[in-house]
View 1: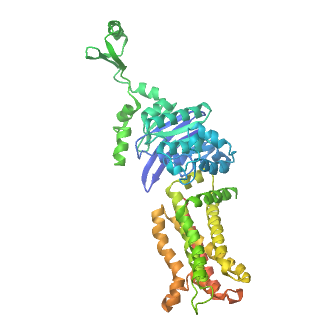
View 2: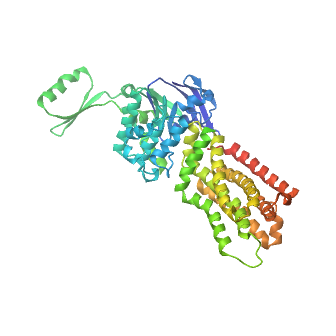
View 3: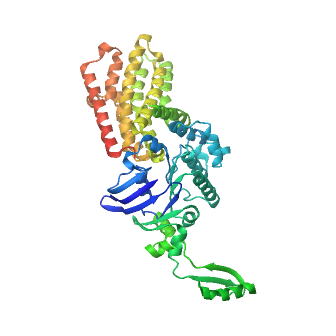
Length: 287
Length: 228
């Protein structure tokens, strides 16, 4: 669906993307993780044809990005970090504008609003919606014309956990319908939950790429099992066959309160590879 | 063309809820009706307020509304959403431009109610040409500005010059010498005569230079900034 080969991009002599390489298959959710300023939005803008690049090759739908037709572009849905809704228009009117542009029947609007949980807010003007509702309205606009390829630039940034879960549910439903989804985020839990594959982007370079579980397993250097016992004691034992008897004894005693294996999450892998944190950097960057 | 019509439809819906833009469109037509009917002074030229406010309407309403609409869409990111939905920049600009021109022509229609029937086509033709030049000027500012605040800070002095210089020129000869190079002053002169026969070659030349200048500035702004 998308192929990106050795892509470079600079702004005023400053390299923001360097040697970007990845492929995304049909029906896959691909996550691009990185802190603020890593180059995520720049890459999305390149992949959607909004921005030219200095070197490399980008193909979407097996066509060079610069030769996408109007119809190809209509098969792409894009939600950028700002939601881009018409604030004075109602939710229905907002979607009607795009239903007309995409040439889809307007009776699809009600079912789309229902799908994103905005059925009762159809007549409300967008300015009166909460941030979470605006995000869902923006998603409704993206999904309404059933695009084959969807780009979501930090779709849950700044949203409450409940809205985040609702949006995750919608994204997974779209994957089931066969959409290919390119998602940027700095939330590693979101990436782990939603993405088939992720790429970790730092200062314009992809430092690691693969299935989240595989990446976490690959960087599991400690290989230990941590247990918290009912006595209050914390026990750390090697993750190996020789420890099985000891764990079994704790289990049969009923003395284990919690038990965890030590494989890292995407956040710790990113920290190990770059010395930076995904979300803390985000906070520092915005302060 | 279909996309331009969709933009026009969207703008019509939006205007009814956008008091800032709505007031630009109805202020001068309403003021003209009130002043023409309320104030009668001996020796005052015929249709004094209609002619004066018409020129002010040309210099103010299309300029501020087009700049405001485009810069707001840029600021709120809706313009990017439209272009990503495969709406071409020219389709968007035609949609917005035609919408503003159409609404202003409705306003001009209201202002023309005090005119003699035989003068109305001439008046509307002059207003149509004036609106077109002002729309180009507004589009320059809208395209050039990143957000509404920048657009407002540029529009204000430009609008004051174009909208008020014809009025100030009535009271001061020095101002008239400068103001004559503005398209609004030329439209004021043309309207004072209210006939095709009264249009002089220098009126046409100055108007053509103004129109070409606006067009050139628009293309420069568009090439430099696009609709980003």
